[in-house]
Length: 85
Image (cartoon, rainbow, N blue to C red; front, side, top):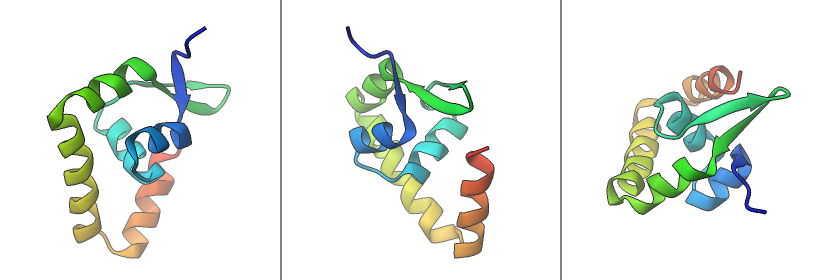
C-alpha cells in the first residue's frame, strides 16, 4: 500500500531541505497538509508535484535563501515556532 501523507521530517528528506523550509512551503500553500492527532502531515501527491516541476525546486531554494538573508536568528526561531503550531 502506498502512503498518501508524509511527516514534515520525511518531507524535508524527500526535498533535501530543512524542516523549516517545509514549514515555509506549507505556510505558502505550495504543498497541501493536514493535522492528524496534533501532527502535521503533507500530501505525497503535492510533494511529487512540487518535485516534478522545475519551478518547485527553484521555489524551495529561493524561499530558503531569501529567508536566510532577511531573518535574524531570533526572527527565524520565532517564525519556526509560529509555523509549527
